[in-house]
Length: 196
Image (cartoon, rainbow, N blue to C red; front, side, top):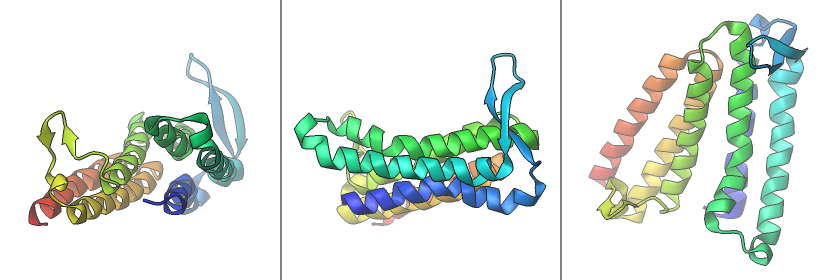
């Protein structure tokens, strides 16, 4: 995936929690916890507009900066490819995670909501790596999509779409549905790889 497409993809993932919050915005209280201490209660709160749109928006801007910085200086600083992938995907995963934690605190969802938001974001990362052909083998064992570039791109797209849908569904508070979406996506990607 070229640099511009990857930045566009990670930017969309940064905004997905805002889309989810837009869906449930009317049901959110005016103040939402944003900082938690080890005892459990919230250390501080923020207006719901900030949690719903401000945090994902800030992380979107920071995501764009991270891409710009890595793309501009990767060769000069000799970033390993793994570090570049980590830097470029950190803000989208953080956006899904922190928005889910804050919304989860007011919706009363168990930690499944946070966990599913993070897993969903990681499914998107996985999809991008499959799409780019960076995950064709585990040790010596070839994975189903390693048969052709076409299969890898199709499976990667399926994983990315499934992950995006699951991020939105998990932040809305439907963790089991998000898990189901991921499971169906894994089965669909495996089936698509075998047919390609």
